[in-house]
Amino acid sequence: MALDLSRLLWPQTSRRMLVSEGEFIVDEVMRHWVTLIVPVLLVIAGMVVFACMPLLGPLWWLGLVAGLGLGGYGFYRMHYEYMDRFVITNMRVFRVHGIFNQHLATVPIARILDISVLQPPLGLLLGYGHFVFESAAQDQGLKRIEFVPNIDERDLTIQRVIQRAGLRARMDWPDADEDDGAS
Image (cartoon, rainbow, N blue to C red):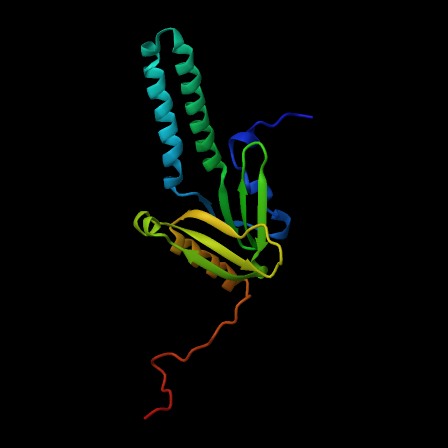
């Protein structure tokens, strides 16, 4: 049995596709860059603590431990954010996240009843939002997807996939050029 460390380094969403059933990725989304602010600040704080080590004298090792802790946790959070993916396929939407324990939550396109888009004030300014899915399942694993960049574009993509799957009724409206009988 071979040890596959690549699963810890890359999300590998394509290996979760039902290729034999004709499933393909329509859109794969990483979380918005705003989620990296705190991890980057932690790494910077770790570097500042390292720079202050000579000032601690014989307690220099406290600076070493604190700097490694802050920097290590910051890098871990950055990688955690990188591994968090929201994927829209022609058959379903799913989210895969986690490094050592990966969690996969899936909702088939046919079960999506309602999608709410929430954009907080900062999300309006920076271009992100949150999805809230209502599905036909009582207990669903995919309820809320946070910090989705270009949320309006992603919402339209999901609506297009649902429409192409034939799950919503298509209304045939008369063209504006046609006579509607009113005189």
